[in-house]
Image 1 (cartoon, one colour):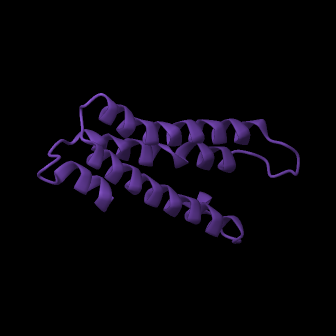
Image 2 (tube, rainbow, N blue to C red):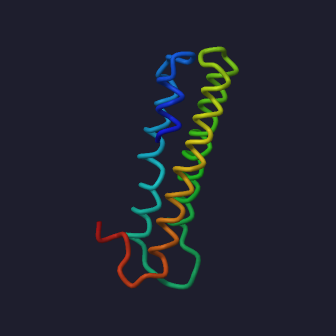
Length: 112
């Protein structure tokens, strides 16, 4: 989050458009968490979980595409775009670590 805030608040950038990626941070894990909570845990392929993963990946791609589109449209500067993309990598790496840590545990994140 520090990189995203720096991309918005540094004096040479001074625009808060890149902060809209925070909406994607909130939306990204929701489809997967809902699908894992309401799906049966059989060994076969689960279309609900696969659809949720597809929606999650669409949200993830949008969060990387938004700063690039804003920078190409000259709405924000490229330095702000790079800081936002760095923040994206760190936030999604943390979310991935969260999901992987609770996948092998007996108590899962569904209790939250």
